[in-house]
Length: 350
Image (cartoon, rainbow, N blue to C red; front, side):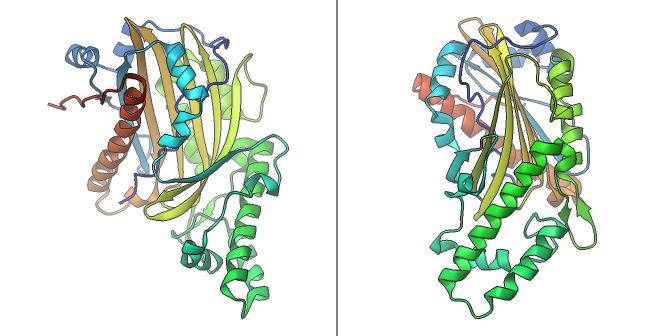
């Protein structure tokens, strides 16, 4: 089905540990465990090094919500050092390429993004795309493709591949610029032919319903919702693009991330404000707190997709959550293994 793709998270992509966590009040680990309804039995499992699940209330029929907690048996500073070396980028399943986006990004910023020779069929499908669910494009983008193809009549495969990459990079740049100027309101809706999907509205709902963000980081939440706006002091902001295999197809993803962390704890927010196909958007929140001899990590994803709506929605949600949960577990296990050379077991759901 869909969800081995939602996870473009770079959990703690930290540039410095000298950040002040801009929070109304940093919760104690015990408070955080209680807030996420982690039971005493689950706390025992956490202390045994196991990964446990917690419920994330889904805010719409299209949303999939999953939460995981884990006690990583190393100090927060060591996790930060691991991430500063860029290791998390390499843990992305199906990663083809990635790159940072600066404030002055232009088409050259996307030079490493594109369909390969082996993906010629996908490139042709993109050039011939029509409103629907095969590609997440706006009405304007579909119209642009239609007019663009007029000049490609009779073109050979090499020309078609080059053209597909050029126009896709153009779309990505335009979406990045629009988001930088207007935030969630600047995200163009996906044209589904007889309807449309609004990823900006989905991301707004996800941010409003982020429990830890609302309770402990209210000013950061408002900045996240009202971007572009002045961010709280000492918040690290990042933009990047990814190209990943999702459901066997290359997928363009645009990401906005905010990071606030200190030796007392912190939070990382990551928003996928454009996804090329298969799902619409994703909101990731990860918080970390020192706990005993390690770091207690709470990791949640809210992902929106049209694929779980409609007939059989309950079953689709169940399958989608499980697929997403498995991928999230792999990521946490990879981090734990890299840091401790040991695979973290999964706690029983019984």
